[in-house]
Image 1 (tube, protein in one colour):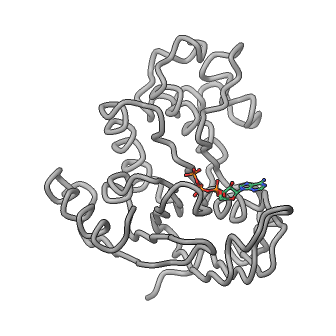
Image 2 (spheres, protein in one colour; image 1 turned 135 degrees about the vertical axis):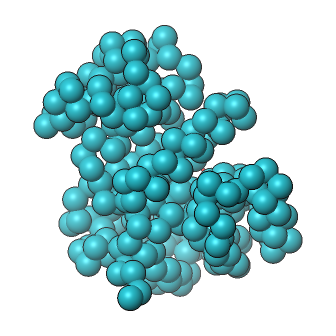
Length: 240
Ligand SMILES: Nc1ncnc2c1ncn2[C@@H]1O[C@H](COP(=O)(O)OP(=O)(O)OP(=O)(O)O)[C@@H](O)[C@H]1O
């Protein structure tokens, strides 16, 4: 049976006030329930804007985006991980989760942090956590509301490659075990090659989908040479 559609995107036109030209001039895309979709493309192409539109945070466009059958702005907030972790500096890791999701008990917050590999850091203030650890707290916070849809906006920028690999593992585990529908925005094709079931490449102004790549290799089997192979395939299709 075909998987049901989690997110359906039909943008006829999107522009910003004062900007010349359209950012999107016709863009359609469906995301299946439980799918991990990556949106890749050069800086400024519109990836973050598209994610904000899917989250219902930007409704100023012609067209319609539905999330589990409802308008994006009516569907209830998705889990959203922003480019910077946006943690409250005066609260420990567990209380940062509870500040955004008050229904989450302390035990649940501690368990989520454990799932992210942060056992023992429950009361640590963000300033005493590494950049990668802060991203993991932000992920735990996004998962606290048990979202059916998880949106990740460049969660790997400004952290070193070793921490990026650790985060890839954490996100891969979330995909396998919790199975939310995930949309990951990245300018780096390697992130997409490691994590995504399907990779959408955006390019140009207005932005268009120039290629769509399905990755039929289980995440656990994506060793470095296979990842490089996927990246090469993506790079052959566009100047990402
Ligand atoms: N609020 C805004 N008002 C005017 N222009 C905007 C606004 N937000 C984004 N833009 C413009 O829209 C374009 C797309 O921006 P967006 O952040 O979506 O791109 P991106 O692909 O995510 O890039 P990056 O990887 O650098 O974040 C850019 O040219 C940006 O300057």
